[in-house]
Length: 127
Image 1 (cartoon, rainbow, N blue to C red):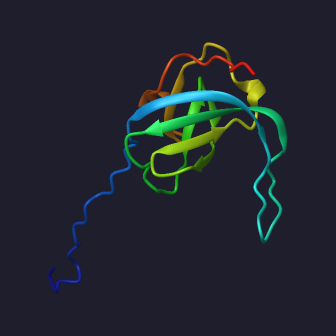
Image 2 (cartoon, rainbow, N blue to C red):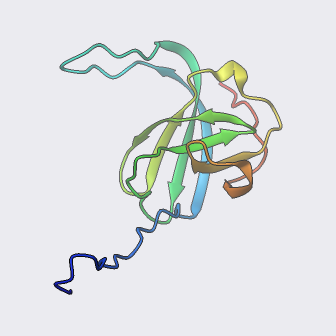
């Protein structure tokens, strides 16, 4: 480090690459918004929605942007981590999910060209 106040210290850029998806599965679930101590959740209670269970080969990096499962161009951004490699993405608007659309993983707002394909085309789970 230098004593020159005009010099800038070089810092390594953080690695925000998403880990590789090991597996993805879907299931129909009931969604009950989490209870918060200091405020009421604005998320709706859903009697039937689609949950994407995603397993990765490493933790998803923490950053200001959220990881998102995209079904075509429809973002599924409500996510909960079960541990460092298992994540549950819940579709808040399941009626918007299109049969046969590609399923990809990316960061919120990321263009489709930068997302990672994670499996087959979307098929509504039975149940």
